[in-house]
Image 1 (cartoon, rainbow, N blue to C red):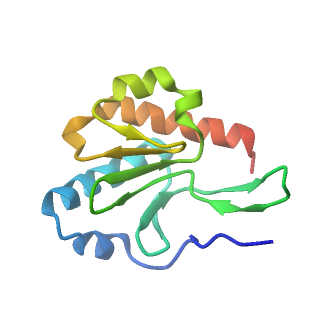
Image 2: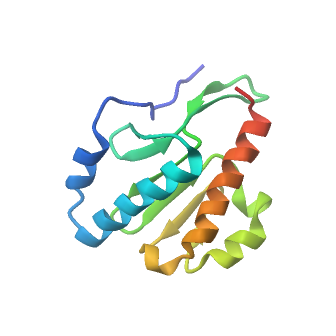
Length: 140
């Protein structure tokens, strides 16, 4: 059975954000840390080299694969800020996604160019709902 490549580390979140070369993306990332921490109730933690996660859960799929991952998180990537949710928001929260703002989506990812492009109150609600969906499906 394979294991997750992305796991929690002891790296410092502030140190990581200091190295984000795009100062606007760095500022937006700091705001996201505050929003996700408030919405989740968990402190930020580095996962792998470039993801900031909040909380964690243990999953077991029907295939037998199991592991641990963060409940919500993000990464300030070169082309966009990738927001990671532990559930399929396209399926579970399509109405809220429609109200979020200027975004692109994947199955459990939302891509934004800058925070001004999204409604932060909707993002906070999406974060809370994603955590609730995940913990209902995978109770710890």
